[in-house]
Structure formats: structure tokens, C-alpha cells
Amino acid sequence: MSEIKLDRRISLLQGTAINMTDMVGIGPFVVLSVVAEIMDGPWFLYAWIAGAILSFIDGMVWSQLGATYPLAGGSYNFLKEGYGPKYGKLMSFLFVWQTMIQAPLVIASAAIGFAQYTCYLFDLTAIEKKFVSGSVVILIVILLYRKIEAIGKISVLLWMGVLVTMGWIICGGLWQGHFLEPVLHMNDGLQINSIFAASLGFASVKTVYSYLGYYNVCHLGGEIVNPQKNIPRSMFISIIGIALLYLLMNISIASVLPLQQIQHSQFIVSEFIQKIAGNSAAKVATVLILWVAFASVFSATLGYSRIPYAAATDGSFFSVFAKLHPTKHFPYVSLLVLGSVAFVFSLLFKLKDVIDAILAMRIVIQFIGQAIGLLLLVKRKGKQHFAWKMPFYPIPALLAIGIWTFIFCSTGYKMMLGGLTVICAGIIVYFIKQYRTSLQQHEHK
Image (cartoon, rainbow, N blue to C red):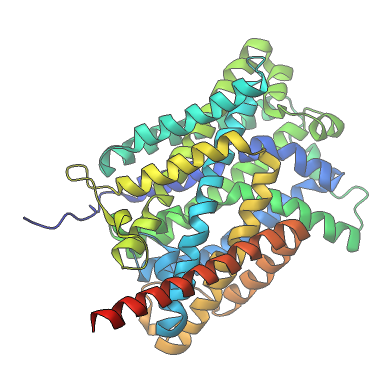
């Protein structure tokens, strides 16, 4: 009987669609007002520009690693290789450890956002909102329970909904004739000082959340066609495309609605469409936003389900997660476990707390740790080892480390402490696991 393996069936188009649907999600629609409120002025566009710059710089780190190690699990493999035989197992274990908490939080955040935006259409009670968010997670798991080529086609269909929604918002502002006004006045009253820097940091926590997902294709590395070229291409196309869409969307809305309304609205995009096209159009737009949110949960769950699988097949995590479906060839145990935890989280938490917790939990190991791991790997193996090489090395990697550190500090003391606590707990569990493994090996001798 032949060994069951992952199939390389995801094309550049499908990989880009998976990235972009993960990136957009419900994030920009629920975060837009929060960012405008934090920045408290027409210069809130700078927070979206900052998120794009960080994503592009960090995308170089992911591209160099992803093209060289195109395997399921992404960061799990990057950390293991980067930190070498001595510390690689610890760092990769910590990544999987935090993923088992952080990935369900990401999935739950999109589901919670979906339920929150549904309130524009229906007057839902708190319990009904929980029912909606939980149902979204269950439906996603059902849709993902199939072969990867079918998932690639579903991703393209969902991606088309993302583009239609964003295109409608942007064109809506253009038709009003004042599209460039927010850009022409974005520096009005702007003062570059410590207050602005602090506001930019807090706002960037929210905008960066809306860009997360540009690397999703790396988690699916074992299923990408021609990964040495398509992994970097899909990431940079996704980042540039989404950055343009976000900026144009913000400009479009700001050209129609006053800043005060943008700052205090829960359904800003629906209100924007209502202003320019009426109530019926606003309801249609809300349905499209829910489509986008659903697409994001779909894409995120797909990528994250490959991480525990990769660790298990490598012998670094519970072996049950290494199982592939006998006929559909996907890690079904990993999908079901992450989906179950996400379902519970979607019933327990609020969106604002989830966003900050997601970033605080993953920055130290996945983003800062990964960039440092790349520096160590280049030092050990040389630049010629890599299938794709970032320009101006090591400047982008060093910039990524510095900016991610700033973002981490901007999540606040409680979230920073929470993220570090998860890491410390993971270190304790790792060494207990290592001790028990060594005892078992000694007994067998």
C-alpha cells in the first residue's frame, strides 16, 4: 500500500486567492472606525500605509524561507531550520504550541466579526450572535472536509466576492466626485511628535491585523505548484493588491462620510453604501461583507490546519495529528481539533480582545523569532542556499524585527504579559515532554 501524501495542486492564482481572502476578511470593515478613532484626524491613512510597509518587508523574510522550504506547516519548518539542531526543536514546538491557541483565535475573530456585522440586517440578541458565530465555524469545517483541488476552486470563487465588494466601495466614492479630498487634506493639523508616534503604534496593531494572512501560502507549501516561484509571487501580489484596495476603500469612505461618523460607526461600510445608494443597496453590501468574512475564515482555517500536521509528521507533536484522510488526502484530525477549539472561542470572546491577543501571542515566536532564525540560517549556510533571496539583505530582516518589536509593545502590557505567559508555559511543557521521552528511551535500553 502506497504512502498517502499531500498533493501539489494549488496554482499561483489559487494561492493568491487564498492569501487575499485570508487578509481581507472582516478585519478592515470592523477595524476602519477604530483606526480613525485612535488617530483622531484625517491622517489615519498613515496607519494603513504603515501596515502595508511592514507586511511587504516581512513578506521578504517569508519569501526567502518559503521558497527554500516549501513544506506543510510553514513557520514550523522555518524555525526548526533557522535555529538548528540545538534550539530548532524548541522554537518549532513553541510555534505549534501557540498555534493551537492562536489559530482558533484567528478563526473565532472572523466568525465573531461575521456575527457582529449580521446585526445590521437583523436585530440579534447576544445569544443569537453567539449562535451565528459558532455556526460559521461549523460550516467552514464542513466545506474544508474535501480534496485540495476542490478547495482551490472554492477559494477563487470566494476571492471574486472579495474583489466585487471592495470594487463597489471604491467606485461608490469615485462617483461622488470628491475622491481625492481625503488625500489632499490628510496632513491638515498633523504634528510629528511622541503623541503621533504612540497613536500610530496603537492604530497599527489594528491595521496589521487586517493585513495578516499574506503568508498563508507558506503553510500550504507542500501543496503549491512550482513553490520556488509561486510562493514569493503570490505573497507580493497579495500584499500590493490588498494595500491598494485598503487605501482606496478608506479614501472612498472618507470622501463621502464625515470623520466623526467614521470614528463612531459599527457598520461603517453599510452606512457608506446607504448614503450613496439607499437602504436596499446597503443590505446587499452587508451580505457581500459577510461573504468576505466567511471567505477569510475559510482561508485561515485551511492554512492553520496544516501546522499541527507538519509537526506531528516530524515527530514533534502528538502523532494523531499526522493522519491524512484516506481518500481526500488532507489532515482531517488537525482540521477537526482546531475547528472545535475555534467554535468554543467564538462563543466566549469579544472581537476587540481577540485582535490584540492574536498579535501579542504570535509576534515574538512567529515574526521576530522567524526573522532572527533567517539571519542565523544565512550565517550557517550562506546566501547560495536559498531558492529566493531578498534584496538588500539583511536590511529588510532587521527592519522587520524592529517594527514587530514596536507593534508588540503597542499591544499593551496585559497582552504582552499574556503572550509571554503562553511562551513560558510552552517552554515548561517542552522540557517536561523531553524529560519524559528521555526516561522512556532509557527504560527501553
